[in-house]
Length: 306
Image (cartoon, rainbow, N blue to C red; front, side):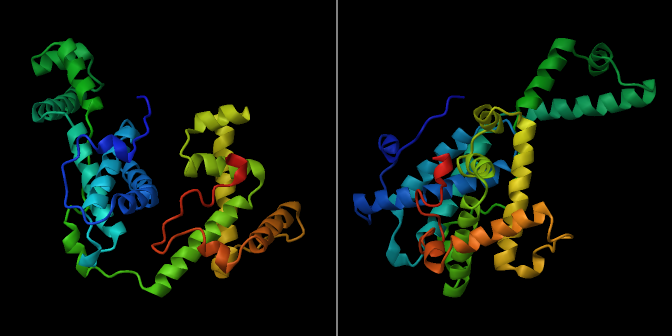
């Protein structure tokens, strides 16, 4: 599928009119500021569903919901916009997934019958049945059997458990993070961005391209002239450094003690931990996020990957 970039203007023609509370400029600012929220919710959903679902489909639905949320949000109702928008974005993503889950009930019924018959024949024959034997037992043809298998493989099997579809009004009674909790969260995010920018150049590029820019591992490997396996190794090495570097500053009890502090590896890690401390301050950490804890547009992306 060809990737497309969706903007607020793309929705003007097909978005139903909503009660306008904010000015067009204020709506645009909300949309621009909260676009990373759509990416976060899409990534979270993609981790729970089959790999063949396209990110573009879910992102488009999420951006559409973000635009309509900006048009319909009333700040006087006391609901923070990120909560108001999150509910609508999640609902839009789930609706899109349901639309993509096109396999009919009859297809699933055939799939269950096929699985049951295959298991029974395997027990009877003492081996996996051939397609011809399976088709004969089912009273169908091998071509129809193949078509059923194809339909099932293409079907999206979703597990929606754990995702809320309640309205934003239902969220009013939910506990909002207090100022102290939000400050801690923003500090943690700030430390993470500084820890990434302190990584060695190649590790920094892998983490930035893979996680922040969401590029496929194959593309990163091609850029660096190495194999995907090597990129996977670099990613694992970078994540280990990040985890230990963050623990050193945020939770020292979890930071591992090196077996040999004088070894080259231990000294390199110590230098990395020190570089994080030297590149960060309270102000610089908080500058990475807005008052709601969302990363500011363009903040924290290392220059090496820009």
